[in-house]
Image: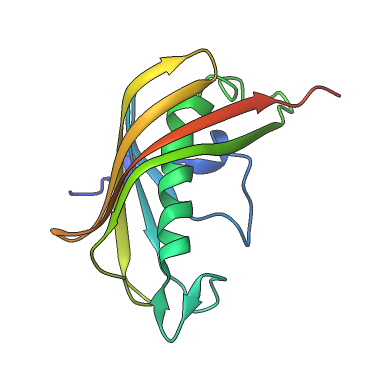
Length: 147
């Protein structure tokens, strides 16, 4: 996928995560039904061990990618101080094929299967170039935190 700077969306507009738990750098494409994100693996990432991005990091990257679909409704107005919390409620199926290395940029794609209010079922995959690294079907729940 060719990344065009004018199409990049700031991930902070749609996720509450911040360093060191932010596992997506940019949203490259976002609709109500799908999202594509990019993430560069850095040496100081908490999920890097022996120069590889671990399975837990790939799963967190997928969850944050998927959350962008549901989270966009909470962050439509960037001026508001919205706080949300999200949970993986179920991983129906997951397959890990390979682990990326430090310095590599992964692309994750997620497609909404179904949604009921703040609960959704999403199919997601992560690639390094054309190589499939991981694929899963995840259920997520996102809730706004009221003060």
